[in-house]
Length: 277
Image (cartoon, rainbow, N blue to C red; front, side, top):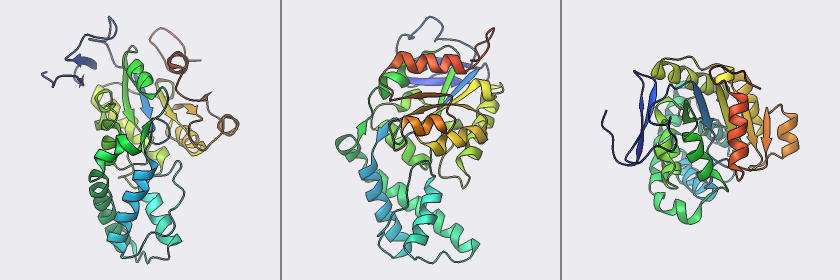
């Protein structure tokens, strides 16, 4: 299967991943059975582009509602659809009936994607890649039998923009991810992502073969609901204590220690012939 230079391709028919345009990172990376799924949260786990995100939200909100966005709902662990409807209520904007609300959300997501795309060149300038993020994603890509995707509250076009701005998109299988474009809680999105991955790779991804790496207590709850182990990273607004008390399987201060990230994934997911920790 041909692929563009410096991209990673997934062969669902044979459950293999292949590295195209460069030498494999490890002897088994060129062809190996996919049996583990690593899902990444994006905002405040891998990148911090909050300033650009807020500007895009404000522009899209006013375009769709005709009102300025005076108050933006708290964003940690929430989907773009949740944030939009909460912001509507906080800014006393009329949501109308169910059909009107659905139409508003559709127009908002379209406007949000356009506003964000218009600012894509600003992402590396005014945003930042969090410590260890690049090394972690790159190293996980070389782990045996792992497919990487995202589980994020961000709508799909903006999720791709965020990772592309920092050169991380080549390691992510966006086809099987869960996004804020879908009007479901994150726990349900995680189940959908597992189902999509199972359909694509031809193998079931259960709790002991799926791990979610994220930064908020709401994300920990989503992993429990969605059927995945969870590595919580205290790079967002939740402290290590809060993350540990919320029930995270592993808690890291950040992603700077790549070995610790890889070790946690290996301990929490099933490698054929072994048992998860």
